[in-house]
Length: 305
Image (cartoon, rainbow, N blue to C red; front, side, top):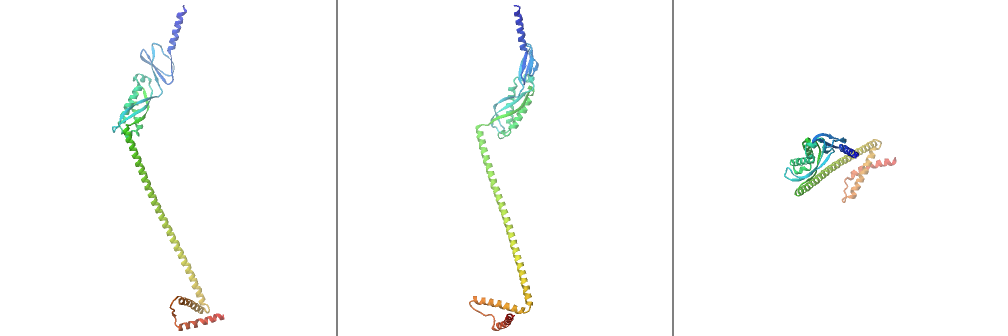
């Protein structure tokens, strides 16, 4: 019977020791209160907590958390209603402030993000909401981070998931985009036609220039050829005259010259008489007789030689 109290005491001691041992997981922080007042903050590892006197009041996650911001209706600067939702990323950096600075920091930051989003959307027009997403996200992060600093929260980033305008606005935007695409297509087509015309005119100009250069070079070549031919003909004529002059200066040169002239005269006269219907002898008989007297002796001397 004396062992029963000992066993009971031993069991109580084991239970108390078991209650005292606390193992805090990695990336968590536990807030310990003593008689309802903040006592200490427990990090990851093995700790001892006095039962009844101390208790674990809060268990906080130190990793980055993702909070889904519910969709809400926002009004743009040009009075168009759009539905916006997003995702908020935050992290607890001061467990004590996150436990006692606000009742529910997750709900509070989500509500603050929605309020800031409505304010930022109201500053811009509908056409700029899609292109200004990054600036809107940065504005929300800056505003919520400053407001949540007393709560021991660090807002890292905010991302807009969807921007949904009304169906009528979507149809109007589609028509606008279609018209804009058609306008760009017409502009591109006109630019293409313009460029083609420019290229064609440039090609025609280059062709005309090349053709004129070719004609110029051709004329130069022809002129050079004619000049060379005249030069050669003149040289040949000069050489012929020189040879004739040498032949005339030789003995009996005058007789040979007269005989050559008479031969050419008879040849031309025969051609004229053959081709003309009316035959006219242009020289008098006396002239022909004197010509024969000059030529026949020359021919006789030539035969004798």
